[in-house]
Length: 86
Image (cartoon, rainbow, N blue to C red):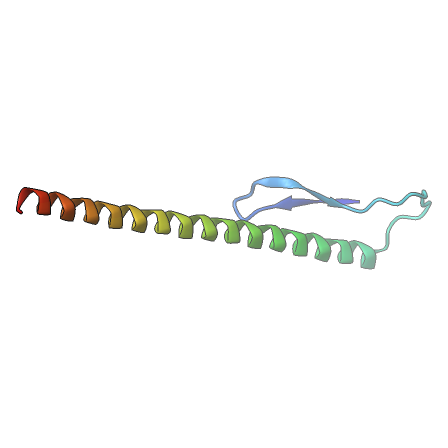
């Protein structure tokens, strides 16, 4: 049994499935199917959480780089002003 992993935008990321090494002649019970669906939902929640964490980290990195660039720009202006106005 496999269940699709679909993000909030409807993008299919893969599937959550359980494999067994021995064949079964009886189909899975509704309870087992329900538990697998819960596991698939949890897996998707973890994927989304990880995605948001990565996006947050990237945003923080961009802010830090912009801040550094601003500081360097301000220092360059200050030095240029001092050179032009001794």
